[in-house]
Image (cartoon, rainbow, N blue to C red):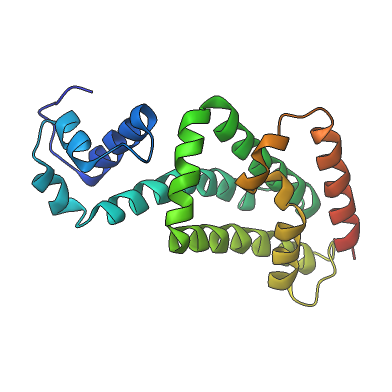
Length: 195
């Protein structure tokens, strides 16, 4: 990555950090590598991110937020709640499959970073379960779903489908039959929520 004359922004630092993580992995990528790629001193990077841990947390959040942002469009879409829930869960599974399959080295690196950043992961899970809660609440409001507590139901749905989005299960996502297993869990989940 060559240095440019564009102003140094947190976004540029995060882009450079992601590239260094892709090249070197979590264990070997350093703030000095990031600074060198940007053509600045590591002290300049530290003006934007006070510590290496803060930088790693920010790049992890950015990576996780890509999935959340994609899924949020489904939540606000016009589909009926059942179709929306199916679409959202399929979108989550597909996003995780792509992250694991399209760039396995970066996925492995982010798996390390996610383990280091439990607050970032907790925020991500809260965002995802919040999106699920909104879908289930919409279904309750329209009479499509029965749930005395949409937030509890959302967490149950999230936990019940974890095999299809928790990175711990990533080695299973490319196995034969995984799509059929996912469809069966989706069908069971939707039947369980129907009013």
